[in-house]
Length: 189
Image 1 (cartoon, rainbow, N blue to C red):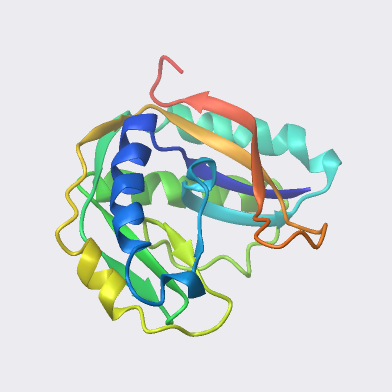
Image 2 (tube, helix red, strand yellow):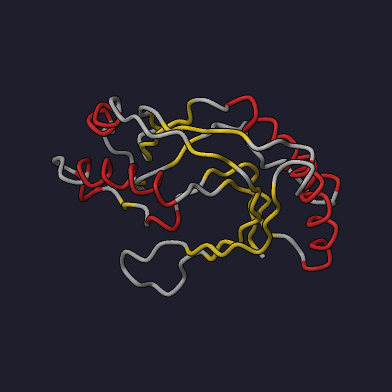
């Protein structure tokens, strides 16, 4: 099963980013981008890839430990950036040290569970409102996100998410995500 560890933003934060994304979707050329569904917006901490069922119990135990060892913290989304002309994104402000620590612990939990993490990239905390399969001039979208100021929100849990990639050939169909494990942060978790 296709898995990743993540922090899920609360509805209020997703609504704020959604309002900004709706404005961006009115810019010339916005049709070249595939706008991410609200439910698919998350902060990936560790991409685990395909994970075999026998590894899940160990992975769950290790992610639970990682969550217990990390105290709740506060995040905020702020500004804009881009990846390789294919995805505009809004970065995380505030709580970066805590978020990176949680990401490192999620990666370590996966490795110790026997999941090869060679494909794991350096953690760049962000939410992605849109993507493109081909390079696009993202400067107007990054500029549009430049003034974006999200409200602070508490991060209180680590989530293991299963991703279902589109495969039905339906135009505009995007990936679906389903939480398969949740762990409260902090010793009380």
